[in-house]
Image 1 (cartoon, rainbow, N blue to C red):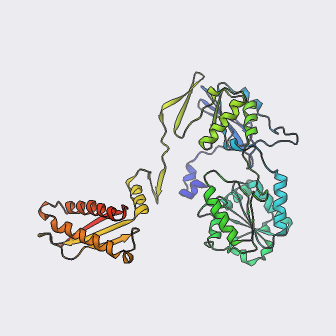
Image 2 (cartoon, rainbow, N blue to C red; image 1 turned 120 degrees about the horizontal axis):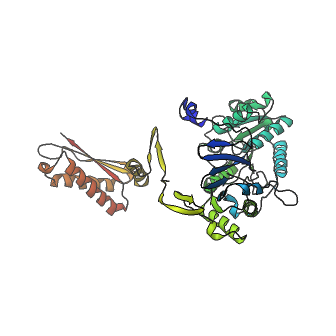
Image 3 (cartoon, rainbow, N blue to C red; image 1 turned 90 degrees about the vertical axis):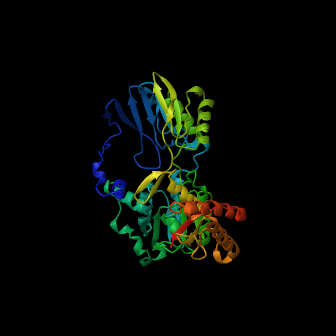
Length: 453
């Protein structure tokens, strides 16, 4: 559906391979693709095995290890030792700094049920749209409590619709209602499940807290639940969202005060057990900040894994495996940011992006001079326009200084040396820029406009 969102019918150009069984094998030329079960917070999560002529890549994706009451892992991965050597384990390492799993799913669901049952008003639950199992549980619990569920957020509605079509979610038609009609129901009967718990600017929760939502106006007796973990890098936006939510509502729940989320990621102990079970020839920690990758390395090495067989890569570095040897390639892949502007796509070094950054930092000053083309004399005093630099009415002295400086530059110039007015434009741009910096220690973009009469 993401391809359809981009352009109608483009998804028809994709060749889709349906995975019908965990034992399915897909041959792609010299590559053989296989699958294995992993535990994560989404339904039917699988890891991928790529067997190649030079070795086998084992990639669990996002994963965790659920454990029995005696602490032993529920899944056994020792069978992954049987693939052709050398084996390279690409191990997601977000949990390399976490010692404990925290709460169980049963405890989390008990807490969520208590909130839904005892809430004085509406219940608004922010979570990941990929948490189909949790959304299914909320739908079933709401039905049991006689409440209605309102989905909000494009990906939330899309994922639930897809899960319903595939048979992962089954519920009575009357339980799910359109968010547009939320005011038609008593507050005590309303449960909203939405996106935005990471503080995304345009997601549902942020629009609610900033009073930009079309259909939901937050109330003091609303109960807001952050049923998600903090993705590294989102700490500031989540904290801002949380603070603003506390200003709006009296009942805000998150993992710091109540267990309302279970992470789908591993812990330090899980990483140790996973490496012990698979015993790869090479360990490649991935999917995390660099310090987390290094922590994953420490966990394995402290457990007896050879340090020289742990490979820590930075973005863009290319690892080559040949003849049971692993080494970095000399070249690197381009990992620069891509700038998407309307229908155009370019790299982050583009001059347009540079100019926009300049405008965002220091603003712009436009100097407009009108001169007689033959004599080079001014027709009138230069006009000064400021955008994002200074407020003209409160900086009249500076504006007049700039005007007089531009006026003197024009008077001193020789129109016979002008080439399509470029010479005087360059003089205005450079010398006015230096003059402004001497007065303000700021360098706005100076845009000279010369009009010939």
